[in-house]
Image (tube, rainbow, N blue to C red; front, side, top):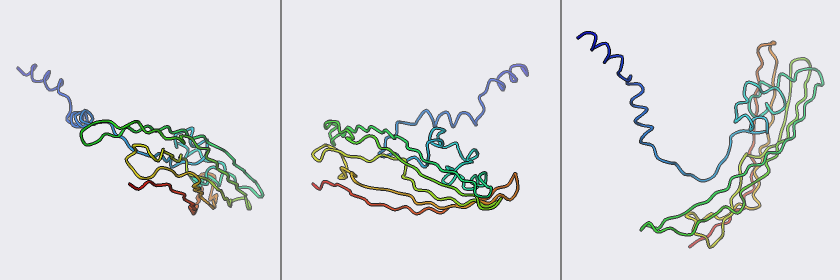
Length: 196
């Protein structure tokens, strides 16, 4: 009998796997609107935001200001200019309370070019100052005014979103760098709405 008990005990699935497995099995699809990626620059975007530890150029201004200190050196300069293409096609099929489907609504402005510009300047052997302009990594939306979309917002054409960022970094030692940045988000919004 002890042999059977040992086999049964080894065959049991640990509790820490049962509950998460059940919870994952109960999930359903999630839907939402809009996409904004909290990253700047093509290098960071291509790595899915996993750029923090490797930030060693002017792109570090947004992701890890301490990384700017890699540019320390009297009058050492760095300039970054990049443009990312964000493509986000959206289709929405609205259902009325009885379950009947309205015509499919499609985003008529699914892509946007997202620029970023940053510069850094080494002052002495340890200090670096930097500044940059960027736009959030996102697209705008535009829908037909007579469409079956659920919300009244039908467009953001002509809107502008710009982040103005300044930062500084200091190389304490070859293994320790500190930095900070400050951003100001400036917007000019042109929102088109439909009122029923």
